[in-house]
Image (cartoon, rainbow, N blue to C red; front, top):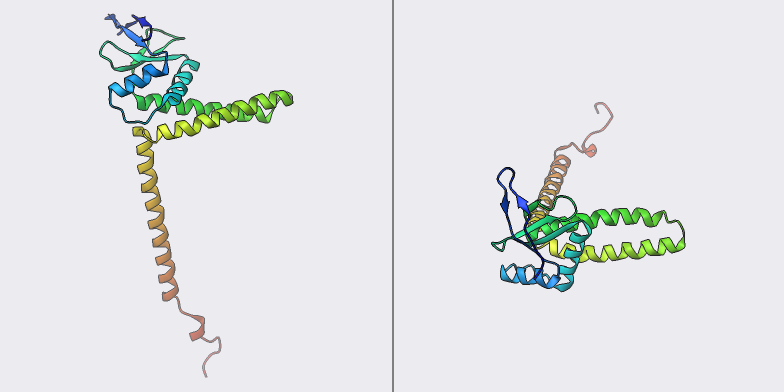
Length: 187
């Protein structure tokens, strides 16, 4: 599997933890399979997740109990935090979104045509990643919460539109019609 590291954690009380960093997508897929996470993540998805982690200076691995952890590989290597697949996917989605915004701005202000082509290709690659990441995100607890919230908001909009139409219909019925009144006084 991955490399073994023994970082120190825990404030005053220093405990040694043995961390196994996952360097290959197959290792991540094996961990997902061992933990019966039915997220539908394939080899290409795992490559994307690990690539973004590495690109942002993090490693994902397991502790001595097999729990998923994230380690800061560039800053403080002793900084190890419990992590979930939901958190991993959410972080990668955020990073992808930020990179898309940056690259979109860059491609709109190229130095020359070759620079534009390179930035456009990178932008399109990020957008392709976004499609895969969106599918993964939908299967996370965060994606499910967003879906439930969207349904509630849609129901509220529909309900408010129904109320608005009922109010309009009621006001049309209760307002006096000009056909019954004349502007002439008396007859």
